[in-house]
Image 1 (cartoon, rainbow, N blue to C red):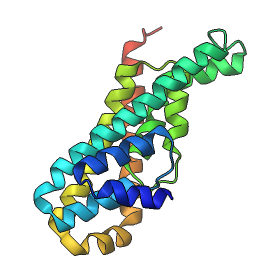
Image 2 (image 1 turned 180 degrees about the vertical axis):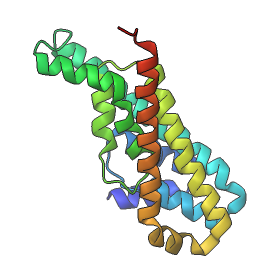
Image 3 (image 1 turned 60 degrees about the vertical axis):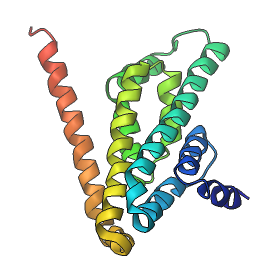
Image 4 (image 1 turned 135 degrees about the vertical axis):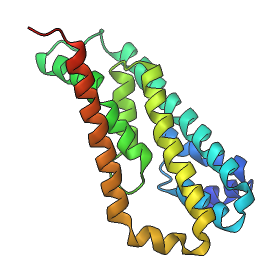
Amino acid sequence: MLHKITLALVAFGPLGIFLIGVIDSLGVPLPAATDYWLLTVAVDAPQRAYFTALMAVIGSSIGSIALFLAARHGRKLFSKGEPTSIRGQKFQQWFNRYGLLTVFVPAVTPIVPLPLKVFVVSAGALHTRISRFLAVLLAARIIRYFGEAYLGVQLGKDVEPFLRRNVWPLGGAVLALALGLYWLMRLSERRRSPEI
């Protein structure tokens, strides 16, 4: 049934990709549907590829923000403020510092089998600043969807074999980028902390 809904939405072109992005990011599982149809548009109608990528970014971001806000308000309804256990407080401190990397990696690539929605819910429930969350999410989605549009336009029908052949190097590049961001965050944190 979800497959039929996806096919019906794709018939609307970029608006359909926008809706698929919203639905998938809200938590309805449409694994890699946005990626697949974006690549299809980029190969079959290159003149619409970048507009379709923009619609994918906007749709996915709207769905993720809605899920983030639902988790934030849900926690307010069901808990009494901050975590009381030491372990809960430590996890919240860690997530506030570095947890957005766990949002960035699965948001930037469909290759790594990490459940993005779990980290979106964690970010919302742990009261991550919405501006930081949105900045990380947008950066990842822009890289992902505009990168896919670019590959589809440049490689045409060869894009799928290219992605299959290069799945590990692309995954490694994303991991290296995430580790680089982590290192920069740690370096920035050390510079801000007063020396003893």
